[in-house]
Length: 61
Image (cartoon, rainbow, N blue to C red; front, side):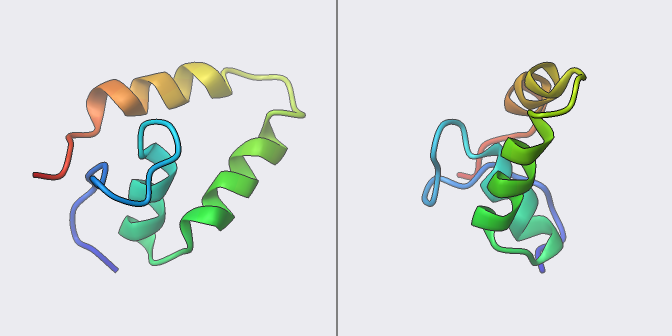
């Protein structure tokens, strides 16, 4: 489990948000992606939250 939340340079699908969250909490990036996709079945601002993560979570250097 990492101590910081960053979007990694590798293991990205679109922007690395799910991969960064997975690394931060010690969960597989694919599990986070699956949870995100399943959450898309519910009404809510999921896309806006993803876009906010893309803008606010720093890139790994």
